[in-house]
Amino acid sequence: MRRPKAVLLFAAVPLAVTAAAYFLVPSDSADAPVRPPVSASQLAREEAKSRAEEEQAADDKAIAALPAGLSAPAKKELAQQIVASAENSTLDWRSAYGYIEDIGDGQGYTAGIIGFCTGTHDLLTLVERYTKAHPDNGLARYLPALREVDGTDSHEGLDPGFTKAWKAEAEVEAFRRAQDEERDRVYFEPAVRLAKLDGLGTLGQFIYYDAMVFHGPGTNATSFYGLRERAIHEADLPSEGGSEKAYLDIFLDVREQAMRTRHGNIDTSRVDTAQRQFLYDGKLDLEPPLTWAVYGETYRVP
Image (cartoon, rainbow, N blue to C red; front, top):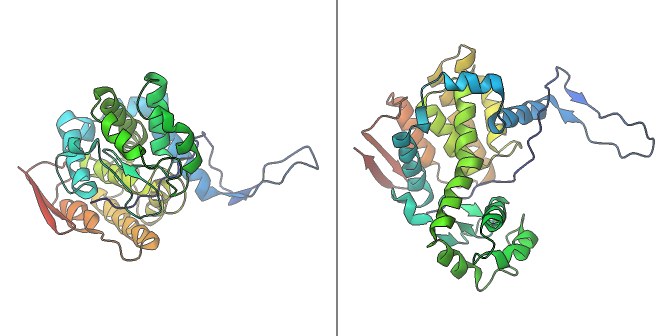
């Protein structure tokens, strides 16, 4: 069972955070357009996004000294299983490479192992990158249509053949690898990297990852970096001496609020009876055995 995510990707540009609440970009030309003010909060979100996505020597050194955490192969596999329980109602996440459906959430077709969407840019990016490496693939002919519908829920130019083409391409090993690589590049690696810099252990890294998948790696108020920025205003990060459990509890509160803001009647069990349950059970290392429930179904990893 898919649940809507909010993904609009923004360019990550390193920015310095200033103490001022607002600034205007100066211009030497009287005719130059006036740019809107940018808040210090927005700058902080952009800086966090940059640290998550860009290699920075000091950060790399700090991360290298830490345990593997969610990056360890067994824990990464577990992470995909838990996400798949919420995204596809199964622990067999590899069964979803060929999944494609419009679930009526206003984001067009949702497809693949992480819920790439035709309306939220990530599916377009996946197909563009795949086509660059494999020009003769069965999805390449849909690129003009995918660019046209990006940011909308439209199927124009995609129906009736796109879903069949996706399922067929999902049988190709190279396309499966492309989905894995795009999942890691856009969602998994930035989430785990930033979580480690924030002083979070394996569970906290997973909580960031699942939030990145569901809310998207954007910097608006209900996207991942907006949620993190709100959470750190209410609780100190562990990297700054705060309690890991207290911070994660606040982060999950903020996340639930954002889920309900976007979709009033949404089922929040992927937070309530999964991640928060792990937290309250003291599973900060996400060490099996694990039992959790999502959308009324119970899952176990021994």
